[in-house]
Image (cartoon, helix red, strand yellow):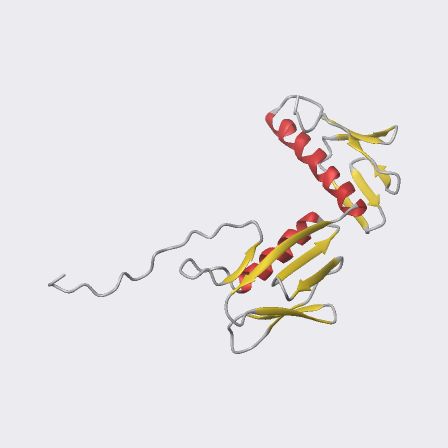
Length: 184
C-alpha cells in the first residue's frame, strides 16, 4: 500500500469539507478550493479525517492513490494556513515595490514590469532585504506565480544578478580569464 496514500488527512477545527463522490470542496478561513479526482479513487470522511482508498493494486491506481491524498492534504493546508514562496532580488539598482495590489519590478529593463496577482494571491515586498513574498491558499497557483516572477529576470551565472528563490543556489562561472600573451 502507498505510504502516503494510506495516511488519513486530519481536518483542523476551522475547515469544512463537502464530499460528493470524487468531487471535494474544502472551505477554510483563507479561502475555498474544489477539485474533482479520478473516479477510481474512493474518498470518505470519518471522524474528522479524510481517508482515500484504491480499488486494486494496479500501477495506475497505486500512482493515483498517493497523489489524490497529497492533493487533498495540500487543499486542507492551503485553506487553513496558506502557502508562501519567497523570492530574492540581486543586482545593482534592481528593486521591487507594490502599487496597490500589483507588483512593480525594476530589474534592468528600460521599462518597469508590472505583475498583477491572480485571485487568491497577495504580494508582500521588503525593500530592505529585497525580498518578495508570494502568498495564497492554492499551492499550485503560488508556485506558478513565483515561477512567472522569476522568469522576468532569471539569475545569471557570472554575477548572480536577477530574481531567484530564497533557497536557490546559483552555480557560478569564472568568466573571462584575461588576455594571455605569448611571453607569459
